[in-house]
Length: 329
Ligand code: ADP
Ligand code: MG
Image 1: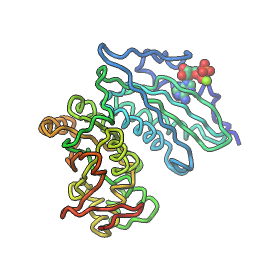
Image 2 (image 1 turned 30 degrees about the horizontal axis):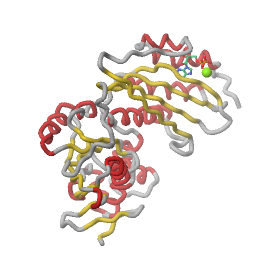
Image 3 (image 1 turned 120 degrees about the vertical axis):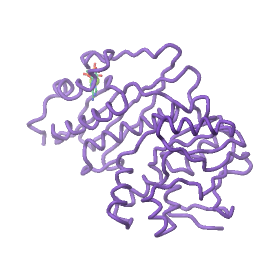
Image 4 (image 1 turned 60 degrees about the vertical axis):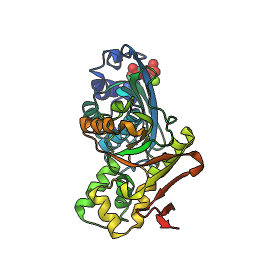
């Protein structure tokens, strides 16, 4: 059933989406075929895209504004991981015939809030309809000093390994949302919020340029993403399990059932920055963390490739991970 209250494609763009482009002159108020943008002197463009599908990445019952914010934030996290400053984004929306104007307006309100939080504007996009699930895609555009983009490939044996924020809240939040995790209402709510609304580390990322030898954002899970970075850098890594920063809510879950520790390290949806840096940069990294108001924790050391990627407990014993948890050898 088509929604009687819903304006046609062009009115929808004009009424709901054009206001989101107001601060970007190069978007021409979404009245032209394309947008223009010039990076600053000595800067180059950084581009990233992510798509989400109803029933796969979000549920029909999830709030529209939160869906929009998460879509934007996962892209902003990719820019943060590369040291890029976010500037704008392109948005593809495919609406079902029964998607209401109120739902679309709530989606746009979520975008509007995060545009202000992160200092970005909508530059353009495309609007289509679909007989299938709702599908959205954001292409985020940022800029970085020429040649300075933080790559996955520069980690060297002896480098320290750091993460921002806390690890595991996203995965535990998903478990909590699915009713699998016990605990206080406050802890449950905190973890679900962390899962629904990641905090991309855009204040920290650009400050790591010249300090980090390699970086990426943790979306698949700490151990998996660390492995990606190590493969690209052709190195190994040793993570000290006892150093992994956990939020109070995640600590409570792990204290109640230690198998949640494995979930925290392998579960994904953290959107924290994972990076390597030479030990002589330690104090500059601490300063970058303070300036950006994003906590950073050293969790291990880059090793030679032959040593592989592994984690050890506080006694130096290896931790092994299954999809559901970890066990000692
Ligand atoms: P064309 O048919 O020439 O590709 P469209 O009619 O699709 O142009 O788009 C007209 C304008 O509206 C363009 O500036 C485009 O970037 C913008 N636009 C369309 N859909 C969206 C959207 N979902 N979000 C933001 N801008 C959009
Ligand atoms: Mg079009």
